Length: 66
Image (cartoon, rainbow, N blue to C red; front, side):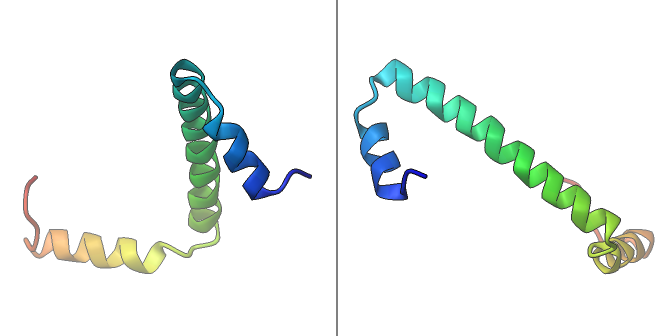
């Protein structure tokens, strides 16, 4: 597998258009990985405590509209 330094050097060689395309592609890839991790955490119950606290605070009127 190519190491990070080689990837960085290859990215530096990209044209502006190629870099924009790469950036979009990598953002999509990274977002998909993040979404999958969040789903795993939700399924494992890792966010239950946070959700319960947020719901409790909301019901108690302790929130700000944004």
